[in-house]
Amino acid sequence: MADTAEKKVSKGKKETFMQGIITLIFSQLLIKLLGLVYNLYLTNREGFGDQGNGIVSASYQIYAVLLTISSTGVPNAISKLVSERVAVGDHKGAYRIFKIAFATFAVIGLIGSLMLFFGAGLIANQWLQIPDAEMTMVALSPAVFFVAISSVMRGYFNGRQNLKVTARSQTLEQIFKTTLTIILVEIVAIISNTSTVWMAGGATLATTLATFVGFGYLYLFYKTRRKEIASEIRETVNYKYERVRNIVKKILLVSIPIALTAIMSSLNKNIDSFTVVRSLKQFMSEDMAVTQYGILGGKVDTLTSLPLSFNVAFATALVPAISAAKAVKDYKSIKQKSTFTLLMSMLIGLPCTVGMCIFAGPILNLLYPNASSGTLVLQISALTIIFTILDQTINSILQGYGKLRIPAIALGCGVIVKLILNLILVPIPSIGVNGAAIASVACHLVAFMISITALKRTIKLKLGVRRFVIKPILATIIMGICSYFIYSSLLGIITETLVTIIAIISAIIIYALAVVVLHVFSKQEIKMLPAGDKICMILEKLKIY
Image 1 (tube, rainbow, N blue to C red):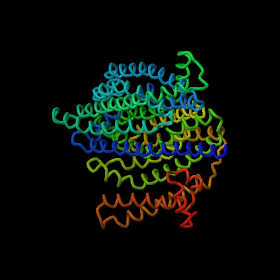
Image 2 (cartoon, rainbow, N blue to C red; image 1 turned 45 degrees about the vertical axis):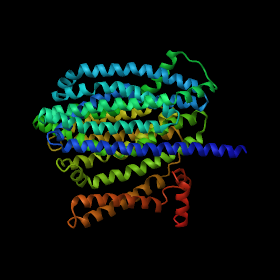
Image 3 (cartoon, helix red, strand yellow; image 1 turned 180 degrees about the vertical axis):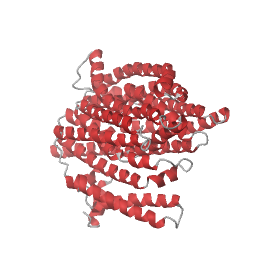
Image 4 (tube, rainbow, N blue to C red; image 1 turned 90 degrees about the vertical axis):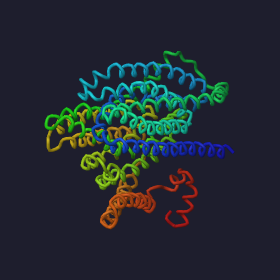
């Protein structure tokens, strides 16, 4: 009887973990697609284009730094602390962490908003040397506050293994962001006679309004769950009173190292905003330099970040799952979840990297017909995808396990490499903006090497070269060769747009079949997927497994 009960609990945990991941994957995919919609709209919009992207991108990188300080480390930190309390039945302690964190980061978020609002002129004119970016930063400033308090609420619900709330709030926020961006930019375009600067301001104002909507949803959801939370608090066990000061200290000790990792990521992009335009202006006009930066910071960054939407779900779910497992000393679960998610990250990252390298030109022509330049930059930048995705997963495992400083140190080393290479390569006329892309590849490679080494020392995972490297690479090679053959065979017979779409769809199908035929997943791992038992039965009937 005890064994049966244990199996049921294990199965329940497995389903919760995977259901949360699937929900987040669909949410992140929708968010990225909607983000791509407004990016396509802005880039192809007359009067905006790559120059407008350059202005917005520069502002977003500054905004991202303040956002990171006030909120990026918060969801994972709060989810880690809350999940540890919930795992041992201390719901009262978990709720107290949430309340204190909310008050703390409301203050931090408000300070961040005020700093961006009053410092916009100095940052745009002196730091970035892009005066047109001042208005966009002013429009973005209130968003820092709303994202800070929203992040605490998301972290609390994540820690309670309620990942759907985060998924829904982020999706709702992105829907409003996309819709409001198009509406406000069109209104501003009419009023300002298509002024690029004013349209950029309208686009960033839409972001601020959308963050308010996201917070509104979280608050309303929280109100509907207050009775349930109160009931859990009454049934609390293992509660241990802690002073407010000690809880704030604990939150900061967890959130600061996690935030530092995100800060390093933001600095990676800010290195481009500070160095690319300055360096390019040495041998081209300012407008041309901003346009080149717009290609890198607008189109290329948008496309290379798309694959992360699939993997971020695993990274988000891993931190509370591993923290909870470690709290009850369930090391078997830690190894199982870590191994599975690393394999999934490898299977996501490799084909996206190779596919974007092969079809960089066709993809740009398909998505940005009015501004399709940047093929080589995209091909080089695509190499960052595999390292970024793997690093993202490894960092979540380490953070969930309590190794909070390693991810920040790893990415910090990568950022130093990035800065040095940017300063050396970008000023060379024959390399130019491509130098920033090369530097980003080196940055993420260095960070990945440090993180994977630390992971191997922390958790003894069985990562067989055959299953984790050789088979995924073989499946990717099969996909690349077959999809390029289809593309080159159909090109000239039908339109390039249709050929590109057919080739991409074919690549996805061929890759999926190759992964199945090569037995990359074990039967146990297939059963971890939604409807995994049914999938396994079908594969057994087909005599594939």
